Length: 122
Image (cartoon, rainbow, N blue to C red; front, top):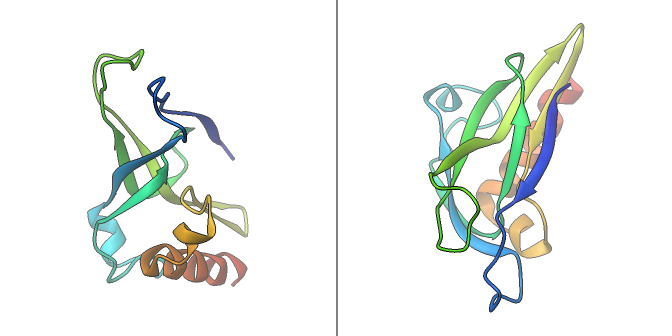
């Protein structure tokens, strides 16, 4: 499976943590998927990951890295944040939020992780 963590946005020299505010945007196919049905776009303050995937993954949600004065890139970059993949008779579920207990206490994150584990295990 290709779903590699590539990095996260660099922080300004004055920032103490890699936590940034960002939005998780649910894609239309997420509205009927058993993992994400009924979950709307939501905001988090945590590490925002830039990940690389391949065409065999089914993306359910994305996040967009903003451009800040100190960033090395010059345009916004959107990457997957929740996706699944079927491989033979196996199922793979990935979600990038979950860096800290505060993030895991978020109702949407917790629901996605719980449903994702159930979906992948059946």
